[in-house]
Image 1: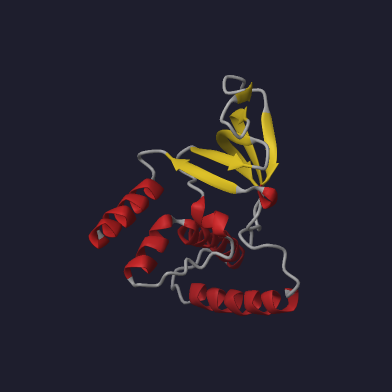
Image 2: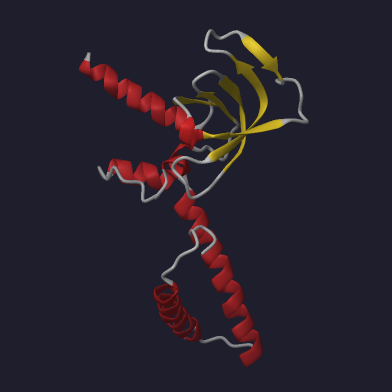
Length: 180
């Protein structure tokens, strides 16, 4: 549930949760070994929390996207594009261009549940449209700037060389060279 945006369909979520919980408890009670009724129920609750956490982590992994890609399924299952673009394992650089300014820096954080999120960047430089530096906070680790990407003209990402995103982009570019 922590991965989902607040939903207005509470009745449906509650019904599905009760059904899944009922099935999970019945499967757990099929285990022939029992300590005591109370301990068994505590272990069922703890195991449900652990399995739910592991399941959520697996759903967020880029490997799932890779498997779907191999199956020629181009939809990642994520509702928001930024969930597919973010690399949670390595730092990312971003460049966001507006009418009169360009902001370049490291992504510190971004707003979830939006295709046009607010982005907090650190170690940033502000440039004018001629690429002249207006302000330089690249060595100041006490400042961040929060930018609204909804009004941006363009957004560029730069991934770390070891990033899985870099590998994915390399594979795509290698495939693109087949068309030349």
